[in-house]
Image 1 (cartoon, rainbow, N blue to C red):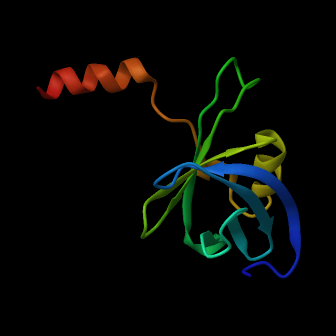
Image 2: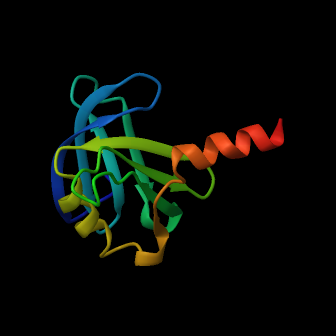
Length: 117
């Protein structure tokens, strides 16, 4: 366990390899994910290791389907939370607000892909 004092526990889905259902735990130590079926499958990310959080936002912030926690060394981990707005509010207490970013729109990514071809 990374967190001594958990602030938030909620149901979530991890998109690492295959979809797995479990729980997200956010607290003083970092961001944790535990699979509900297999306790050996877990992800622990200390706050010092988080580079930024990419938040997919649709309908002007009314729908947040998934978040991606990008680390400094190991890349990104994608999650879908039961209540993403509540999750992001708690995460903002530990991560500076400028480290929350939106991904580039799909048409911009496609446009760049055609430019590089």
